Length: 303
Image (cartoon, rainbow, N blue to C red; front, side, top):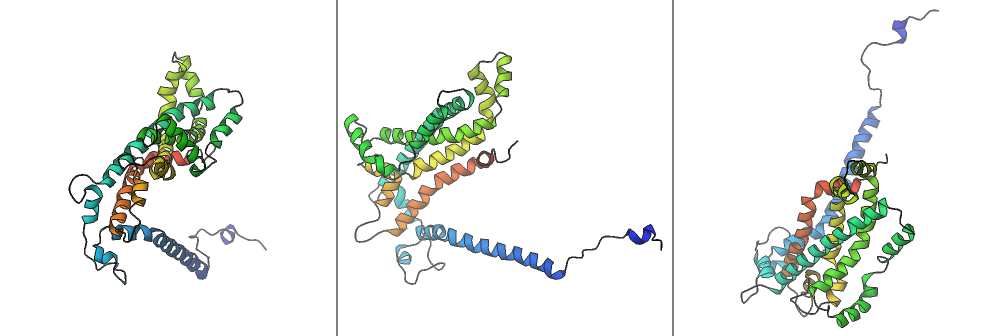
């Protein structure tokens, strides 16, 4: 028996033969995933939200039992105490915040200035025992700061760097340079060396080719590396507390930790200081967010 083409090939619209239960199951799974992710986000962000709430509560609401989540009076007195002393003038916390800005900023710039050319050299040139040198550079980050802080303390006391901002800048730079070299080497490897070769054929020197053609392509990687280096310098606690002794040099992490102790703790002041301390890194990461995302994802797709 013959079969016509019209009987075997349908020209009408294709209908969805997926069972309704399966379609509803997929939609229900998406809703469940969103609900679980929302619950996880709430759990993860609750300490941050509680810190922000505590910073704007009056002291009687901070110590209230049961805790007040919504029905409390908003005050900005704790933020005022972060920057101004009770008798007038600048507070010790404001000096510590300024020290953190100087130490973290300068050490990050120095680590970037020193690490980027070194990473470019390791990526472009045939260095003898390159892998061994890179492993040695990375091995300086294997030991936690608490292991080497005592020898560094003794050395700093002998050379006059103890309780100085220069001492903190140097030690933070020394710890950030190996990290910068390793991160930036991966970014430099992603930039074809043919760009520099073509530039040198046009008459540019090696350094000019790097500065004019390679360096602009490394901006996303530099931004990502600088953010991580800044976070380390900004949050570092062990060196800051062991290598400083005066309030005029001490950075923010040990200064905030010093607020906790004694018979009573002003948790509103602690929370306000923590909020102020967290803002600069968040603002910096937000300003370079485009470069940060591009730098972190650079090399994810192999050509």
